[in-house]
Length: 256
Image (cartoon, rainbow, N blue to C red):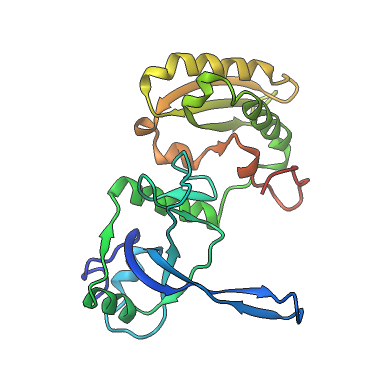
């Protein structure tokens, strides 16, 4: 029987006390050394197709786990961020260690009474998309970096306004086939009732961008339930801490 047939999925959360190790540089010897720890909550990150090809009693390490955290969860869903919500208060962090376990370990955990549960399908799809974006995030093309940085700066400056507190995320899209470059701003909301006020807030942001950098061609706002994963995949977050860039382009201050 495969792990998939046994009910395991990408996004399955299991409660189990397992080692969480990393390699750091010793401050004493100056050599690499193991930093040993343990963690009690995990999510399966391996793809369903891999789980379907993994026999439940196989002793070869090959299933990727990610530690799940519950303290200080992010305020938004985080599909383009370092942290991604799996449930309302459980999340994963991109930089955390990612141990490989054998299928036999997972099978044994269930036999021993450890709890397993699967996150809902929408969250699971978001987690799958997040994993893909974190491994191969689209980089802002060099010629668009000044525009992306400027938008991110203005959004950050206006985050203190009351209407901005109702915005989960601001996404950017670009059309550099036009001269000047055209850009779109899309706000992701919790409550559709805020759409009109948030659009006005976004329009003000769009008007502050110098036309030499770009011109807004679309300003929109929609609730999180109305935002497709396709839109998220083709957009950039208007947050300097989430921007990526090509290696040949200048490193934007504060971006990762």
